[in-house]
Length: 232
Image 1 (cartoon, one colour):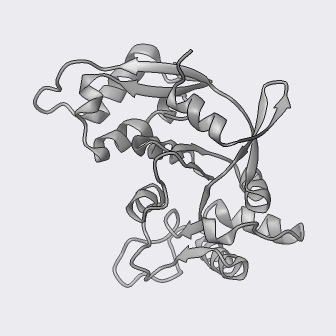
Image 2 (cartoon, rainbow, N blue to C red; image 1 turned 30 degrees about the horizontal axis):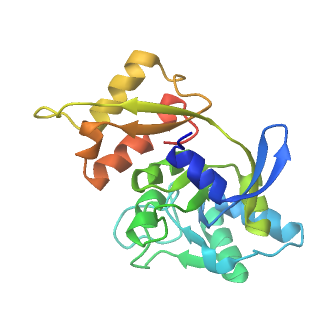
């Protein structure tokens, strides 16, 4: 029987079958940001654990920081400064890659990841952010996790995960003038609902998908979570 891309990547990263539908997966890359990543790093410190492979862990400041020129650690969000300074201190102490304010590599986590060659086809990547599924646009098996899961991934480079069901969605034909990837996913959600993809990993296929540039594929996969999917 043929395998989907999800099946293949899942098999390649399986460390152990834990039974009852759960699999221990190896995680190639971990990306953090200052909003939830700081919580995971602090939890790791409090438990007395270290980051297992700091060279494969990345962190950027993107959720709380101001976007104004000359920005500093001060933000308009109450308590924002503490998140930023705490994340910086923990990231430096852990020895992970930090894209701090003023670093040319700093930016939105799901943009920086492919831009810097961190997310690649075939890798597993997790981030404590629901839109990590964006990176499925280039063939990565990527999904959002919580701070507790991030802490476990940092300490072990693995996660216990239940394999989602597969769903293939085909868009055939050519996109008309003024029709873009976001229109495709919005149409899908309007037709089947915001929970239509719940419990599934979505594979987008068809002539219209093959014709999309990589940026448009990112847009499509980014909104798989709005369809309720585990990833896309």
